[in-house]
Amino acid sequence: MAYDVTLILGDGTGPDLAAAARQCLDATGVKINWDLQEAGVDAMAKTGTPLPDATLESVRRTRCALKAPITTPVGTGFRSINVFLRQELGLFACIRPCKYYPGVRTLYDKTPVDIVIVRENTEDLYAGIEFERGDSKTAELIAEINRLATGRKIVTGADETGVSIKPISVTGSERIVRCAFEYARENGRKKVTAVHKANIMKFSDGLYLETARETAKQYPDIEFEDRIVDNMCMQLVQKPELYDVVVLPNLYGDIISDLAAGLVGGLGVAPGANLGPNGAVFEATHGSAPKYKGLNKVNPCAVILSGMLMLKHLGEKDAALRLENAVAAVIAEGKSVTYDMKADRNDPSAVGTREMADAICEKLG
Image (cartoon, rainbow, N blue to C red; front, top):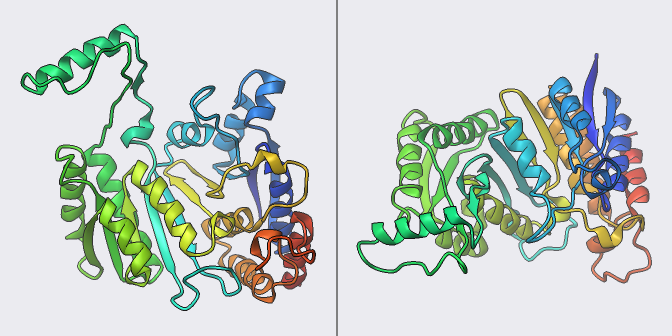
């Protein structure tokens, strides 16, 4: 059987990482018909849009994509293509495993971390409902905010204030919490922790927490608890071994997944899966690192491990396990690894992106 998969090449270091991941996935023996597509700043320069229609149509057709990193301009320019894809395709769940592999440099090698972050993808502040300072609608919103504050002037004038709206629904909260519990059941996990700030945001995060607690009652075989987000950050740093599956609204999920990646050695070993009823997009947690474009230098493991998650999604569990074991073996040996995985980042024995991919393929046999 052959699978149709869209390979989004990305920009910056994306094309090099896409090539490395494709090489390793093909080396597993699983037959994949790759449909190569573009997105990001390079596509913008060529086509006038960072997400060409052909790319979106391809993902809709294949219902499965492996995406290399894409640059998101900070403060100006187009909005995140990653966020747009998740919203446009209804990919409501982001699964980000944060697992320690022996050989990775980390402060937590004596207490191996194995945490799965389950992040809601479509609501919260990442819905992108914003009002620019100086806009007439912003002025109306600020007037209403101050009115609701019973006379207190909470925010200043519209000429110097931007406004973001944070929508959180029962439906969105229930399906992401249910996703976390189903993942726990399917993967032999024992506990789900819901993270929130319900002590302050009582009608948004409070709704999320109430929904999580009600949903948890349907899974009596799995332990459930909740944590306030700032306390959760401290807990993860002090005793990460206490946590298993962690489910969060969108913004907290983005932040905590990077924190958790730091516990296991960094974003270079942090894969991700975006899932919904109409398809799936697999991507590394890290960005495009444009300063390393074309230098054959960056760590390909996160994109390769995202491909491993894709194989699991396609039902190719044996191939996924062999690929993960090959990545783990190369990391453990410490010979054919990129500079960021060396004790000394200037170690001349560090290899490039392509060479590390070659070593992983050799382990696959």
